[in-house]
Image (tube, rainbow, N blue to C red; front, side, top):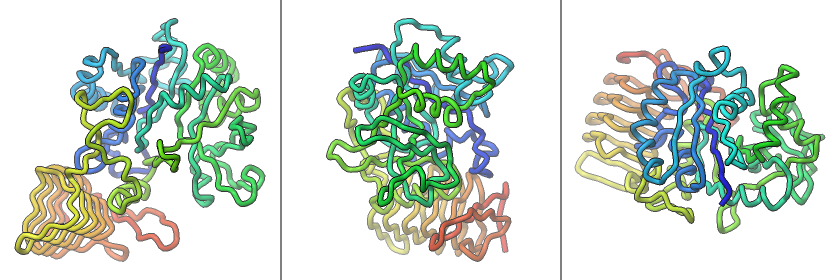
Length: 406
């Protein structure tokens, strides 16, 4: 098996996820009742195997380093691979100037000639994938770059890098967050969006990055991938499940996508993420539990006045005589008698007081929602409303540090 290096981009500030990211780096945001967003990518690396992992951090890098050292370091060591955290402050000029610059500096600092392929990943995506299927595809097509891709809704194409490719997968052009897609996407077809997952032949990648840097360009989507597509060396890898259906992948880029992804979990939109054992040929099971487990999913539970329906509930959450429906309840959460929590994500240590009503909301960690307070499409004390597509409920983020009251 050829040596592979996994590079995980985990340095972004997450401006569109504020206020959740004011005190927490985006990769460490809670996802589900027990996992963090970055856990999905690291679990994929561990389960896929075949190489070391370098996590590139910048914003609140010490928090990321501390979490990964405790949570993930031992599992990689037991597998015989290494997990390294490379903070931007260690890079030239004390920080990364873009995604391509981060990758370049990581490769220069490492300089391991035994690594033939570089797999570049994002630390803020939710999906389950065996990277070796994509690496083998890269080896077979004979090109120098492979871009993981999924179909997306045309209304969301502006959020992603959109690929124009031949039927055999060879990329003809790459368009970063285009304003229009008529000249890119053939009639009757959905846009093909980059997943931010790339496989490169290492030497070719370094040569490209050297050239791009000389021109003062430092971003993959804007400069590196369009250049590779123009050279005829880039190919598309369509992300599919083993049964041939489209793979579930979500970019946790803003408050709406964060909330929507949790609702998909509850409504069967991504059942492949629930796993009690690894689906990969090189299993991680036994080394590390997957980020999500079906044991937290309660379809129907009634005990006196307490009613929980179709919700993911952390094992150490405390729910009294309340109604919880289609919601995700994080660790340390306390929901008191006669409270209502509907289609919401309640994060670590939050308290929902008696008679409070929390609808279509994301409640920040350690926030107390007081008795009688109501959140929802038309209500919200000190709330931030995410822009939504037509027909979708607004998201109210309970953003005050402290208590809410009427």
